[in-house]
Length: 300
Ligand code: ATP
Image (cartoon, rainbow, N blue to C red; front, top):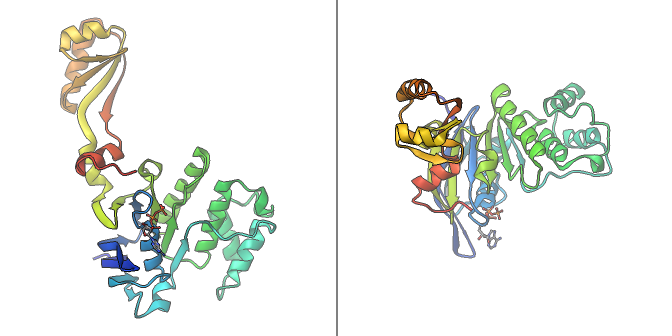
């Protein structure tokens, strides 16, 4: 059986006697990407700080690669890479010099490892430029490069797409997917915006007021997002309404049908001289699916 890279079992954290994390459990295996989603103040950063030993647990167990974070911290943290809040970067130094500085914190990081990481994060053309000249997305990728220099197998990123423009977000998401797939890293990404990271995750945990309100594999959720509806773009929606007794939205007809019924419906429309431009499945976004599952509790 595949072992967990990270496992959190019934973890609690009280701050000034106030319960902040209230008995949450989750795990991540090699190559998995967990989206840790919740509104501001839900407890995402606190959970991450507990995992990387910046705060002490009130109760529960956290293990990384089988090592208990409380009893065996050095072994547990050895193969963890992380960015909490923003990456620590020297703006007046080049990207390369920033990486060299970090490499000095570890034993045995060679020049070829630095070059390998630069390539992995796609900064080879700009690595000699000062970080002050980088876009926010490039800085985030440089931060990830720093975090993976020592070849961790668990990467923890706190709000990695926060403040990035759509292009920057896309690049960071692609990089995360690549690290999980090619480097077999287990990745935990916290975010307050499910839509921003849903494409890249295979597991999602939704945190609210220090509790996990929903935890699922993406495959399971995807099964629930189908609304059993198809949107058909046609030249004569009114006529389609008469034929199929369906709903109309502008130039589109909304047909309630199973996938197997679609070919029959298409041929019926064609026989009635309706011109068809497109047929697409009407699916809810992941956020809508979650809202449905959590009884309408808003994530943000
Ligand atoms: P954000 O997206 O805003 O970073 P978050 O989900 O990461 O939110 P946390 O930063 O973990 O949330 O905070 C969770 C709760 O714990 C918040 O209500 C916060 O006010 C409280 N909290 C965190 N650290 C402390 C502290 N040192 N003292 C008192 N309260 C704290």
